[in-house]
Length: 151
Image (cartoon, rainbow, N blue to C red; front, side, top):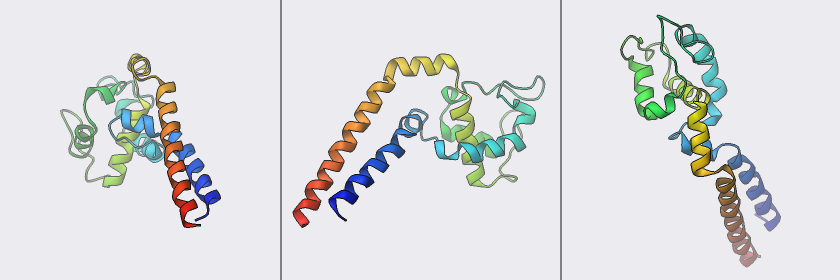
């Protein structure tokens, strides 16, 4: 690959990373790329009890706002697949990809505003973006050096 191709690859990788790395790591491995598919599953299987906006339906399902702070991803996937308390199991109705997608949708969408503000105050979006840009530049520089030695 030419040095120009390496630079463009690094720029594209940086753009992709800026779109979701910090969110996924902050939410324990939830995948922002699964949100659209997870939303479709949620609307079909979950909204009837938990509400379209995650605020819950009285007598049917608890609110899901801030759910990511109330347990880890594996626990939520287990609850979706096998049920918990009054919540029925969906493991027979949804495949594992759908369970994973709806878990990502719920955990990344229904974020408590206070928790999001606290996380931003602790981590600082600007800091994480700058660190990511710096790491990408170092990686791209290393690739350029390696490519120039081959030419």
